[in-house]
Length: 149
Image (cartoon, rainbow, N blue to C red):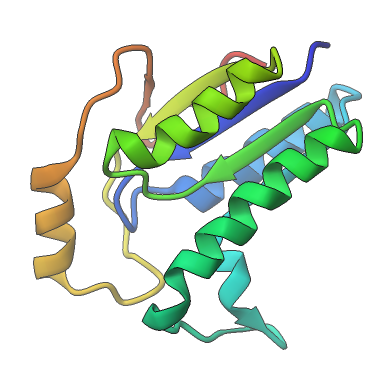
């Protein structure tokens, strides 16, 4: 397997983390080395999510660096799951992957579950309104299984 980046994007509560865990499991069961990162992981301390909006930039830098360090360490498949509402945020990952000849698959979660971080409805609605389409993304509905493995 060539090294491959899986990007999972969507609004809060769309199932990004759940889908990432399922994809990671499926890839691992298929015999691939795989890691999974999310900017939210930066805010986990002693098993508790401790959000600090002042650190969001640092969290995204940590996530980006973790993804590409994992590739450098030989990991075959790396999954990153963040909102990526604006294409410019996701494109930094895509550009870096292409620079290193990693394959890229983009999934867009099109579900509406309860968001686990209590993001207010008005914020989620603004994110929905500003969400930018990516031409080659695979739309995932609630019952879908990971594709492109």
